[in-house]
Image (cartoon, rainbow, N blue to C red; front, side):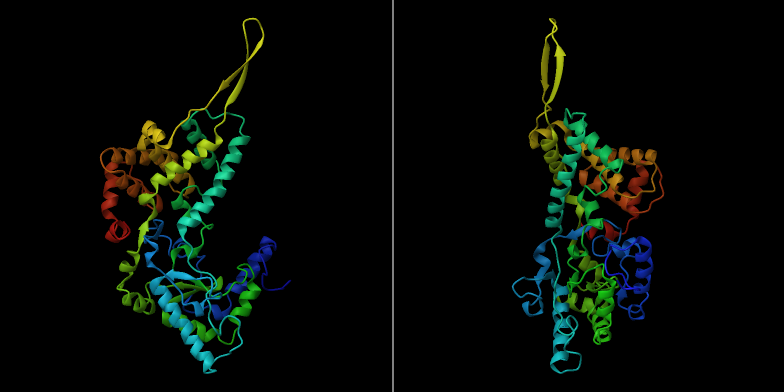
Length: 403
C-alpha cells in the first residue's frame, strides 16, 4: 500500500481524506485547463444542467458522431461524442500521432503517445431505463416486506412517497433527479472522452499518468483544442464549450456561440411526465397482491375472505386519476429527492400554487416553473403572483434555449 497515494476507495475515511489532498495538490495539476469537477454543484453537474441548474440532455442523437476508428482503443467498438467534440478530439489525436512519428515526444507512454478513446458518450435514456429496472426491484422488495396490504393506487402512491421522504429509498426515482445524481456518469452529456481505462479510485495510477514525459504537451494541447482535464480523473477530457478552441470546432458545425451549443440540449422535465406515470403504474402492477382475512361465520366456523386490489389499465388509470393527481405526487417526490431550503409549509404552498397555475394553463408551464423554483435558490414569497413573476425574471436563455 502506498504511503502517500490512495490505491482504491477501500482505505479508511481518514486515510483517504489525507491521501486525496496530497494527490489533488500535485503541482502538475495546478494549471489551466485542469479542473476539479467535484468542487461546487455547477462544476459537478457540468454538461448535465442548464445555466439555471435544470437537468438537461441532448435533444437527439443526431448530434452524436463517431470518433475515427484509428483513435479508438478498439476499432471494432465505436466511441462517440457530440459532433464538434469528436472533430476536436480527432485533431488532438492526430496532433499527437504526428509528434510520435517525428519522434518529438516519448513514443512508449501507454496513454499519452498515441491518444485512444476508451470511454465516451452513453445515452441517458438507456442509462435511466437500466437504472429504473434496478430501482424497481428494490421498491418491489420493500413493498413485499411490508405487512400492510396495498388496496388501491392512491394508497400505493402515498406509501411510495413516504418511503422517499423517510429516506428508505436513498436513490433518486425521477429522471431529472437521476441525471443530477452521482450515479449518472458525466459521459451522458456527449462532452466527455476518456483516454485510459484506469481505476478512478487509484491515485497512484493517476500520479503515474501525470508523471508522463508527454504530460506538459498534453495539457497545452488540450487547452489549445478546447478540452478541460478532470483533476480527479486526468485521462478524462471534457469539452469546454465556452473556450475559443472548442468554439472554433463548434463554429464549423454552425454552433458558434455557447447559447447555440446549448440549443442542442433540452430540459428533461418537459417530456418526462408520461414516463413518470408509466413508471409508477408498472411498479403498482407488480406489488399489488390479494389479502386474506379469516372471519367467523354465525355458526362459529372460520371463513376465508379474499380482497383483491383495484385493477387498472394504463389508460384507465389516467382517466380515473387525471394529470393533476400525478403532478401533485410528482412535485412531492421531487421535493423529497432534492436538497431544499423550503419548509414543509412552503413546499405545500408552492405545490398548491403551481397546481392552480396548471388549472389555468398547459401542464408544461406549471412543471417548468416548479422545476425552476426547485433547482434554483429563490427567496420564498408564498403567492402565485410570485411564481409567475419569478418566471419572467429568469433569463431568456433559461426559458427558451432548452425547450
